[in-house]
Length: 357
Ligand code: NAI
Ligand code: MG
Image (cartoon, rainbow, N blue to C red; front, side, top):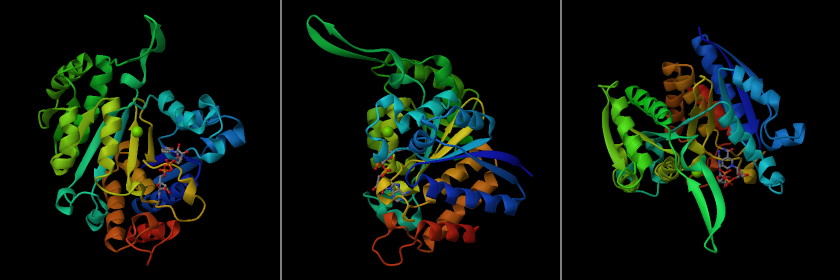
């Protein structure tokens, strides 16, 4: 029996609807496998601003840090768009990632066979797609100092800095090798080592780490080539590891291989053991509160919590199989439906997953 405390941060828009779905699925798993999951709810984002005056209240930070895993919905929406940057809902998300040092962002990209028609690419290109992007999340160009505007010789210029410490590279690369050991054992490290010094350090460090993982196959790929290969041969990848900005761009590119935003989960993992699991999509204000949201991305995120957070691989596989089963049986929320017949609601899709479990 495994006993875990899970912090649930529903957030804004469709966040509460999809996290409720994920909780129900986790409760079913707990019951079925005799685990004990207890849930505690906290405020984040716009709803935290409304209730507590700030996007990440101290109490949310504390309960999150003390728990075994965090399940997040989404933050933001038009109600808070008028607020200045430092007070916006998104600040809550950036702050919780930073305060828990969640440096590894894992995004699986997998084609569901019953949905391959949803991809803009040809069926034969995408039907075997099943890979994991491991993106460094707290370093690189988005955080490097100095960053400034200045005037040089009478002309305005702007500076951003791309800096990586060896220890930052090592820890993300180890995550990627470990993830590959649970998969097909193939890592592609993506960099721009022909041009960037930080990429040369990246590549050297990857090669050094490789010696601890003799059962994993490693290739290096330049990022421009990787962008091309993701479209021309997406089924050749198993694990892709890369720095922050390259990962940002490649993961959005990759998300289009499999179709709807409503299907894609993510995990952000850190040094402390507590991870943050959330759908890739946002708060979808256009459909919030209408029981229309696709809960599968949130449910798949809870499967990532079972797998990467609690090492409950069998249980995670059950959830993934249940998702495949309901899609195979033709259950479709509006975002993945080919036409308007037989479209199911958020709660009906969730019930179908629970029944499949
Ligand atoms: P979005 O992902 O919320 O929505 C884009 C489109 O996809 C919308 O038409 C929406 O209805 C649809 N969609 C998204 N998730 C869906 C689901 N589960 N089922 C069915 N349809 C779904 O992105 P958008 O519209 O750019 O942003 C809306 C708000 O969400 C903004 O305030 C934005 O800042 C925030 N946001 C938050 C994120 C987070 O919390 N991690 C990530 C992305 C955006
Ligand atoms: Mg992005």
